[in-house]
Image 1 (cartoon, rainbow, N blue to C red):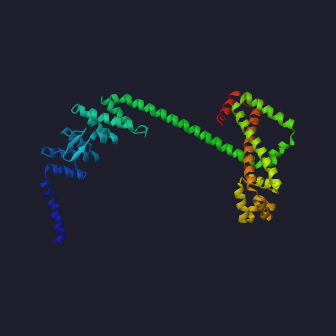
Image 2: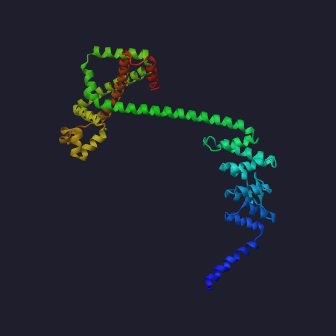
Image 3: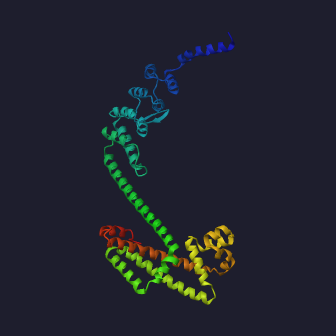
Length: 372
């Protein structure tokens, strides 16, 4: 026989010998460590004098060995809170945290043996859950708390839990309402920005040019119609419209004064109006326009601004006036906002006149402009 085979046989022979040399408590410890301990083996070891410790109860619970846990408790282990030299372990807390129904049943079956401790531990657990509800309203512990109350434990906490659940639900509902309102306003603001940008592109050549073609009487008559409609049906929108119109008229007067002053200084205001127009059409700032011309990218500049600005870019850059462009940009923004609201009033007026929208629907739309 080779030395290797001999060593193997000796090792196999030593196993039952070593096992026979272990104390009953060591047999339980080994069985738990190797995940092999059965209830019958544990019962035999206990009959031989094995001591059940808090560590054994904890290890059996974590191994999912329900039969052994049940045996340990039947043999005197305290499932609510077990303290000894190996440490402290509460099977109840473990079962509650991990939602282990089998372990909870074991605990509730023994609550008459430890009434004060059972009440203390159950109450502490429910109080903990209540304290965490605001952080996580979806805690998966509702069944555990229900089982505790069904067992007649921690009953004073039931009303407290219900009150906290109601408070959390109301807080969630408030936050959800605020979120919806915030998103609604953001959507309206985004729509407003898109509408304003689109109007800025059309402003100089189309909208303002078209307005100038109308006589004062024609322009005034149209404005009176929609303003009268606004007073009767959409007061919030009318108020926003009037504010926007006043801001635009003031900006218009200021720009006219600035143009006169710049002309007196020899500034080419006609060219500056063209710059303002191409910036609006391309949705670019004056600074971006200047950067484009300085960059010297012929393809991009010809596509955006045309031949005049490309081939005469040095003269354009020399004549461009940042004071005029800042005032002109503000004038365009205020004009776009004014006309955006004016078109809103006009559209609603038209829909109302043909019966396509009801007064109640107008009131609902008007509410969107409250506080603007």
